[in-house]
Length: 91
Image: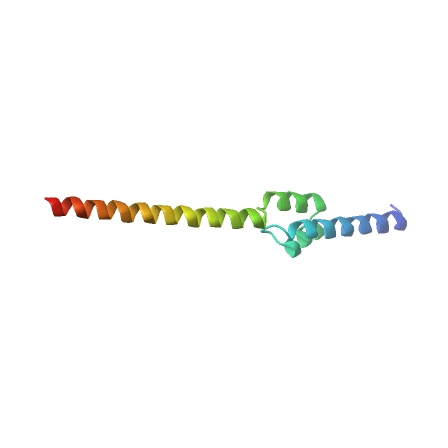
């Protein structure tokens, strides 16, 4: 492999790693981690990690959904406890 081919491959490798870093910035893995994985292992490994990492907006949505489910469970528990207290008072 001559020097020109090596330099061209190196430039392509770094450019792909930068692109994967930008893709990773919108995910849990983060841009820097995605870039470093791509740079040191390969862009293919980096892209696999990026696409297996959850998107930040998905994580935010799941947290809000979990919070609302916890609120509903808390309300139902309070209602159930109040109902049991009323039944106990009747006895």
